[in-house]
Length: 456
Image 1 (cartoon, one colour):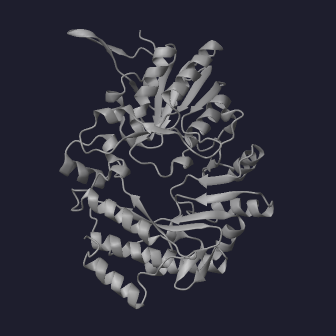
Image 2 (cartoon, rainbow, N blue to C red):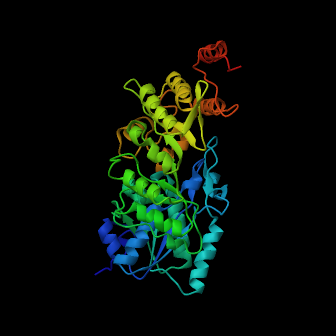
Image 3 (tube, rainbow, N blue to C red):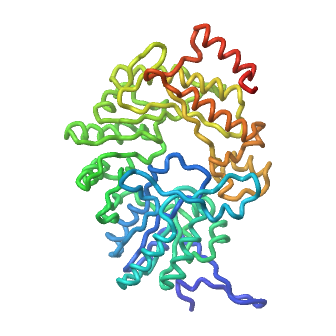
């Protein structure tokens, strides 16, 4: 009878070829034993503007689970760990060599492969050979480095079986089984780690620049306190909506931070849902040191910026001192405040995008284009496949603007929009120009933009 790790299949017409096993999360976890190496692989993409905020929260929680429930000795190699100066290395990926003409360069973000090779050699030199290696990716479109990690593990250590888990095999199960033949196990569903706090001791003597948090954890305030003892004072909640069930989840955490006078700073870089912003508790956010608030798009039924929602939010921020009024705009007081603007969606309209950008600039003070990626299995993903044919996971990277061209807007149009928002965000004496104002200059600029008179 074949063992759990016999991952070959025979063919009457040829040699045996490897095939990954598709396992449910509990079955895969049951196979973990003794020594486990966790790997957060490098990112391969054309752009990655938020690179310093990459942290493998699921792997850190998985480390806790394996140590506490399976008695494993766990180690971590994090390609994406920023340097003490807060930077992440970048070099041109070898994948770029095989791209068709006109495609943007693919960058390798993270530690170079040579650093990983040296790490594996050091493990072997100290006779610490992992029994299994677990790899995950934050998104499905960053899958391309997964088989490369597995190759190096197999070539240098030979002994471990390799597991891939997370969003890539969850959303692209068949692709993972087909294109990662050097993987032994593909975990086809989500690993439930809700009750496991992250284990930052996996970083050893290194101290990450920030700590990722999950509001679904049993005691996120305890996670904050433990992180501060390790010298971490900056925090990001990795939740889709940090204000969901605010009174039960986020509010008690911030109250404990304030009551204990902890030196903690929170960065709202994701999940800051504008419609759910707790206007009545804005003072609590200010007292707990929310130093960044990047508001998710809030649009009305016509696809235009919901002005009243933003006005209510910004008024609450003004009353708590997060921002102050300066002329017709806003001035942030030691905070980074912006409004995200979706771009690259299936039904984009260039005029609406420009108007929404101007309106967000007027209402919030800064606008940041947020490129869209259709989730595999969603209606928009089916929309893209119906037009483009076969779509590979890497094709859906938001920075490749996968819907561009099919939605009536060319990639060059979006490049112009990026340039336009960069121009709009320029500040003079700490505030931006109100392009929707009533002054003669504002009206003249709007007329010029409506007639595309900047296209000389």
